[in-house]
Every structure is written in C-alpha cells, then in structure tokens.
Amino acid sequence: MKAKKIFYCTECGNEFAKWSGQCPACGKWNTLAEGEAAPAVSSKKSFSGAKSAREGKPVKLAEIGGADEIRFSTGIEELDRVLGGGAVVGALVLVGGAPGIGKSTLLLQMCMHIGRFADVLYVTGEESANQLKMRANRLNVKGDGLSVLPETSLDAVLSAVEKTGPNVVIVDSIQTLYDPDGTGAPGSVSQIKGCTMALMKLAKENGITVFVVGHVNKDGDIAGPKILEHMVDCVLYFEGESHTRYRIIRAAKNRFGSTNEIGVFEMEEKGLREVPNPSETLLSGRPVNVPGTCVACVMEGTRPLLAEIQALVSRSGAAVTRRVADGFDFNRLLLLLAVLEKRGGMNIGSCDAYVNVIGGLRLDEPAADLPAVIALASSMKDCPVDSSMAALGEVGLTGELRAVSSLNQRLAEIARLGFRRVIIPKQGSAGIVFPEGLEVFRAKNVREAIEAALTR
Image 1: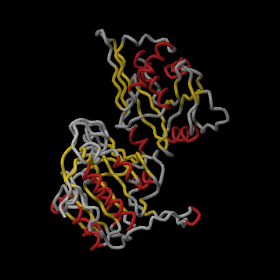
Image 2: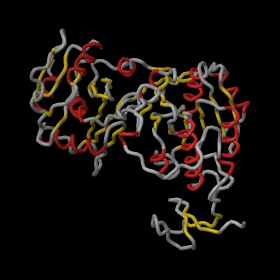
Image 3: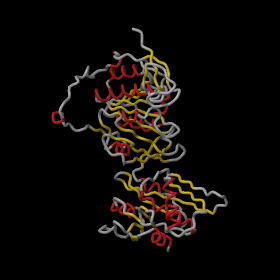
Image 4: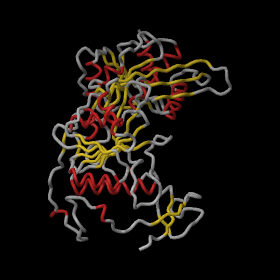
C-alpha cells in the first residue's frame, strides 16, 4: 500500500494533511515540510520480552502491586548521588551538555563498572568501533561485559538488543539515530521524537536501563523538541567550560529522586575523577589579604558547598557603567548593588562592578547574597576580608538580612574546613548550636555585616 503524503512541522513535529505557510500548532512560519506518514504498525519494532497489544482496561490503584523500584550502582558515587542513589532498572536517562564537556567519557567509565556484573550495549553513532576502542584504552576502560555497536539505524539497534539481551543500553547520541520508517532527516524533530519513543518502550517493557546522550543548542538546552525532556525519566546536565578543570553534573528532572543534588568531577588526562570534597578543592589557591573576595556557603541538595565569590569595583569614566556577572544571577547583582548604595551608604552607582564565582559554579541560592555584598564592599573600600571568615544570608530590599535553611549543616561545614569566623543573619539563628572554635557574628542588616567583615 502506498504511503500517504503528509506535511510535518520541523519545529514542533506535528503532522498535517495539507501545507500551510504558518504551523497551526506552534505558530512558526515556513516550517512545514513534506514527507510520508509512517505505517501504523511495524513488525520491526518488536523485541523479545515485549508485551503484545495491551488491553485498554483500567486498573484500580489498590490492585496494583507495590513493588519497590530496583536500583543498582553505576560504580561512580557522584553520579549515583545525582541519580538519587543509583540507576533504576527500566529508566530512560537523558545526559546533555556542551560538546567536549565529558558526556561520553563519563558513560564509558560507567560501563567499566557496570560491565562487571551486567551486560552493556554501547551504541555509537558518532564514532567507529576503532575510535571508541582507542578512547577506552586512553581511559583505561576494560571491556568486560561491554559490547559496542557502531550503528545509526533504529531497526538495527532494536534487533541487536533482541539478540544480545543487555541489561543497560547507551545511545550516543540521539541526534544521530534515525528510524527508516519515519519522516525527516536524522536529527530532525520528528526523528528525535520517534526514536526516543521507541527507546522508552524498549526500557519500560523489557526492564532495560537506557542512557541517551543529547547535544545542546547555542542556548544551552537539549537540541530537539522540548517534549524530549518530558518523555524521559531523568535529565542530567553537564555544566562547566571545556577548558576548565571542574565539571558539575546536576539533575534537571528526576522521577526517582531529588533534583537538588550535584556531582563534582575533575577532568584529567585519563578521564573524569570524582571530587568527594568539592569545598576544599574549590577553595584551594584562594588569595589571602586581597580586597574583593568572600567565601559563601550554599546548599546543593543535602550537601553544603563552600565557594569563593570575587568582586571588582572600579571608577568608570564612561556615561554608562558596566555590570558583569559570571556564575551569579545578573538581575540579582543589580538588586544587590542598589541595596548596597541605598542601605549600605556606598556611592557605587558611578562604578563598574564585576562579580565572578570561582570554579565554574553557578550560585542561585539567596544565601549567596551576603557574601556577594561583602565582596563588593571590600573591593569598593579596598579593604580585605579576613581569610578565615565566611558569610551567608539573604539580603532584602530594605537592607535587612533574612534567615536561611539548614544553618546547622552550613556552620558545621564551615568549621570543618578551618574557618574561625562567620557572619550570619540574626533572624532565625535563635537556638542554633554553634560549632566549637567558630566565632559567629549575627547581623541584622548589611551595614552591620559590612562593618563586622571589614573591621580587623
């Protein structure tokens, strides 16, 4: 039977019976392309252990078995932390990040650990088998339990899974995979949606854990339709610059765990190395008795993390001053500069202001407000902050300091790393047991905090 001609939108992937200059679904112009509708049923898409047609009969919630989710360790503690305690059997995990950030390296290192107790199929559409072998040798990855399939056809991948029966499947990358029965070129919206749906069916019906690598676009989002992130169970993002040492992986979505945890890695010649104590690592090499720097303590999930915030304030001869923030929210910086001038009594409006978070971290938590303000004031007055001092607290528009959560954990981490003084908000600190040897100054507003930080 001859396939029916249809038109599909290259942006949203919806199909239509006739062509139109504007997509009726997403409203984009000149995005409809002609193609052939895929057959409703394809015998190629069946695999061993898969259920046939499901009965459309609803089941009461009380009658559904309450079996616990089955997890297994990936052998990488930082990755297990982000996944919520390990990978879940039958889960579909999307790993995204910029080119060269370390996505394939991390998954190949994971294969070495999982291959000791399970069968892994690594589907590579971007490298040949020899290229993957060369990278495995460089990373000192053994091949126990690991099979490699250099293939881009979805049918060939499903056939290989049916024949070998692996426990874990890795697809690198989803943009190179294509369905011969689908419409559009490899990497198009319709192809990405169709291939991801097939992989999701493979994972759910066969109890196979599938990891999918996804490239990002220039905006930093996963390339392809946004629905791709809705289809998978977990979305992991690699953060950091390819030319820096440290990499941070965090979960943007996780159906089986928290999205607040992060994993920290260091890129070395032989691959990614876990950083079990990121606070100590990120603070190494911190300048002493230099104006414009202050240590913040933020919470990343259940882990307190210390980071150095640096600021530079200089007089501007231009009509319009510059404000630059790297690793810190730009709008939050503008707010803090306004509070510092209005409530802190500093004429900072005619100055250029630059804020940078060391180590490639991005601090979005309000507890980083006070350290940023102190670093800015230190640079403005050219007066260094005591190197054994840290600060934490949220700054309000009236200059008051607001309470932060998990104060006990933050103070314990600050004391563990050898800091002797800390500035915290007075509000919400009643009843807190302070660690021994840690001098705590409780400030009500930014003026008190700045005076305490810049007074020797």
